[in-house]
Image (cartoon, rainbow over all chains, first blue to last red; front, side):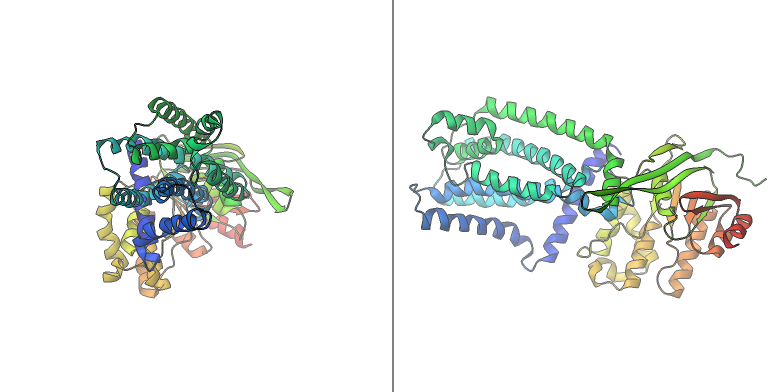
Length: 258
Length: 233
């Protein structure tokens, strides 16, 4: 399989999955927006209405964090199950196993484009000035995509080995939900050193903060940090793909006999 | 001596064994032996029939030949550049997609480019006789319509070694005859084929040689008549 064929196959599978998914639900494609908005609504009720946030811009702040976090968590959870979910196909045809998580990630990206459009529209409606500096979200977006790819590849491999990892991955997402600064501001932590630690150790916290820096405050994100992060993730993802290539038949056997 | 015996070897299995660790219950594992020291060679253009009871290891044999799984020991040699692929009735149809989209997806998964996939849709639609239903979701199809779509899609598989696991009887009687005829054309032509079947007649009609697999071991390999005779003894 050539690289070009491999990449176009990822995209084709993703688009077919979107089509099938939209056909299954009464509201079809609308769910791409409804679901994330419902998540935002729940968090808004709890952290602003009930607990009373001190920020006037809490909804914009929350949307920047929550809508980008859901992209990560939903994609990784779905992609992690994608290989075992394709048992029938894997028993019949010798395909690169990385195809399944990557198609799943690509599917999530298409959905997320609609969510980003919604987020930007809301911010503009709230009076945040759309300017050329918003284009700085593009590199942030690319790095987040790479992070999703890496986490999905690792997750899907582990779930193939032992299905119990689906539970662990679910728990990990809850852990990240609380530690990535989605409904609280990393930069407002009382201990500035602690804020540095969070931003360095949790790439998701860094990315979410970067989205806010660009979209809410019109700042340029920390480009050195972003470049190093992107590079490290890309190298790790390529290494993981090598592991997939080498163990393709082993993974097939695990899936078929599970 | 038959006409294929001096042709190039397309696929060769040398002392191939296959076993895996199966989990019986929590924390308990056992080794499951599926194939045991199987050796055989397949020459260009020949059709090899494989017979054996349920659970004898026939499907695993085809999966090993297709390169889906690797043997635990032994060697599988393929002629350089030779593609080996399982012929399957539809690669797990997505019920919410139309027949056309499912056919397209199957073709893409089997290695076709977008243009090639697009090009073969016409003939799939024609052969399947689905008419306007081809553009309706597969979930609205009857069992027979699904089978027709599956067979017509499978017929588009173009590989050097075609591995067939019991797909010859689908649809109503008329379609079944048409399908059998199309399949016979493919098999008896220059195509190299491994055909798994429970039907003695199919094996006798279509195959040049036969192999009998029993309990993971190769019990007999040779002319169709003598192998069938031993199998039925």
